[in-house]
Image (tube, rainbow, N blue to C red; front, side, top):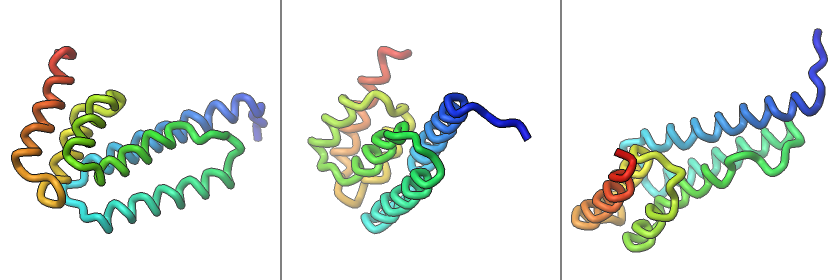
Length: 129
């Protein structure tokens, strides 16, 4: 057995938590269809994950917690709010943003709004190319 110094342990935990949270968002972004109840379950699952993490480690605040919560909550935004949100949240990949818009199609965003939002994402992505 090798004892890991607390500062090193905290750095390892921080990286693991950050990676887990980024992986959760990537997984949520791969969802093809999702109801309001499904998003609510995602929030509950994430809250359970956070509760377990808080028992395992003393790291506070939890790294990238807001990154996951913000992505889940974005599903509930109206068309205009989502367009503003997309422009303000450049920390998400183009793929994650596109999938968010596509999942909202039919539930509370129509095809015309979808095209407008995808155009906004394309405008943001254009300087990267």
